[in-house]
Amino acid sequence: MNLYHFAFGAGTRACIGRNISLLEIGKALPTWLRIFDIALADPEKDWRVHNAFVVKQLDATAYFSMREAPKLEKSGGFEKEMVNVEVERV
Image (cartoon, helix red, strand yellow):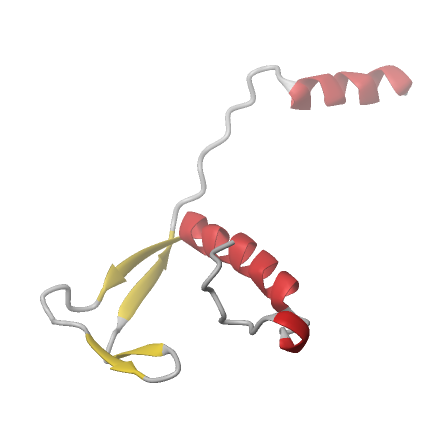
């Protein structure tokens, strides 16, 4: 972890939700990027930011569209073995 990263505080005053928050960020963001295609509404427009306690982007509009699910082929793998096991038990 970066020694100078204090987003969640430090020492005895550290945020008790830090670890769960970092876990959620590490799981949620990659999931969103896997499920959605993301595009800026106006790619030519310059970004404006407001720098206070945290940096906030102003007038940043993006479009989220669902990606197509990959087509699965049944090629005699695990699914076929499971079907055979079910048939043999009957």
